[in-house]
Image (cartoon, rainbow, N blue to C red):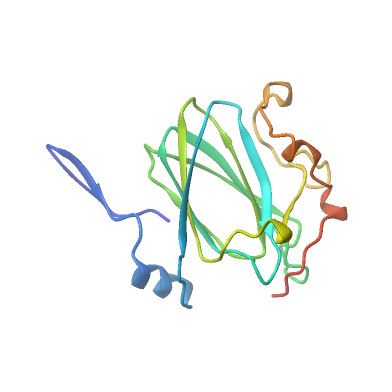
Length: 172
C-alpha cells in the first residue's frame, strides 16, 4: 500500500489508516482492535511469527522511523503460493505499508538503528496460539540480505521450528 502523502512547506500529512478505503481494496470488512509499536536497532530480526485460529490476525504494518526488510510467508496449505515468501523494504522515507492477511507468518529485520515499526492487528494476542518459523530455514531460502552472524535475535526466535515442522491451520 502506498498512502497518499500531501506535502507543503511545513512538511507532510499522510492518512495512515482509512477503514473504508482498506475494506474497498480488500473486498471484506476489517476491524482493527490494537496497535503495537517496537523499536529495534540495526540487525534486530523479529519473527517469523503468527497465531493460529481462532486467534489468527490480519495486520497492517508500517515504519515510523528507520527502515526494515519485511517478510511474509504463505501458510495457507492449499494456496498456489503455499510456502513462498514475499519481502518488501518499508521505511519512514518511502512510507509504504503492507497488509498481511491471516494465514501468513510475518517477520522483519531492522536495517537502521532506532527503527520504529508500527502494526495494527484485528485480534487479541494469545500466547497459547502463538507460533513461529525459523527465519533461516533453508527450505524457505529467504534472502534477508544481511550477515547472519550479525543478527540480533530473541531467545524465543532463535529456537523456532522449521517450516516443515510448524503448526499451520489455514484454509483458503
